[in-house]
Image 1 (cartoon, rainbow, N blue to C red):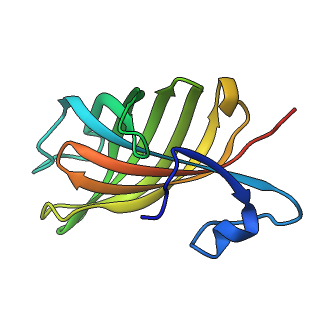
Image 2 (image 1 turned 90 degrees about the horizontal axis):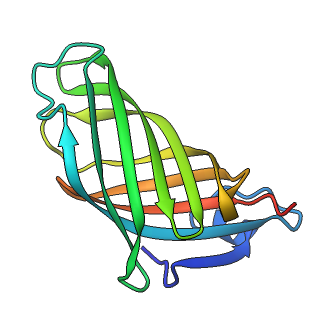
Image 3 (image 1 turned 120 degrees about the vertical axis):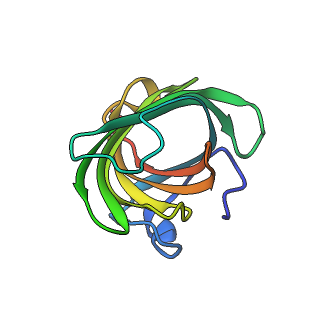
Length: 158
């Protein structure tokens, strides 16, 4: 993962060279990377759960660049479909940072064999410095209680 700073602004086209989506034409992409550590969990383990089962996590976030505290987060998910080797889940997350909130949402396949998860979700908005944010977030599971999350944000600088 090549994010040396907690927050960097780069031309969107540059980000697309490393897997980001760029709108081009002078758009700027803001990249923010954090690590989360869950302190509270509910609805686990995800074995023999029915459609409609709810689960979630909440905890603290750390700036990947500085190692310093960077707010809190919460996630609420619902099982949409149950398959033999995975669950289809729909999740909504909110990340409270010193600069405002960032919200994400997405559907993903949760493997039932405890394989590490890597997935992307849409950034659906925010508050403060992140008001009207769009973009996506890349989630990489580090452990049962931790994710590294890289936000690729397009900010509306009104």
